[in-house]
Length: 127
Image (cartoon, rainbow, N blue to C red; front, side, top):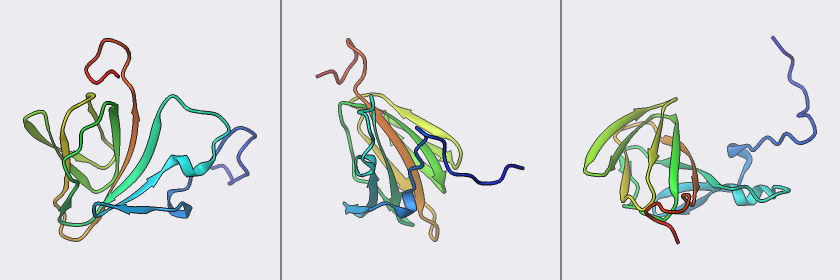
């Protein structure tokens, strides 16, 4: 087992629990922009928390979105279907796809990490 050490030069630890979160449409949202990264990344990212027995609003955007369920189970409604995504698994949404993420737990919050980026040329959602 390795002892905890300071991160090497160039390695950043982005701590969701120490970051500032905003409340947006009933969700707790922590965006990466606040971490003052030294270079612009080719994607944006955030954590969001869906309270117990709640859902996100229907969202759609021009970016492709890859989301990792950190804790809880996300019930994702998109593209005419519904799928349960447990902690440790992820879901990929194509650009422009309307989607809703439900937390059906009566007691536990759902935490999701989401990275999103503009799709490569020729795909739906291009600007």
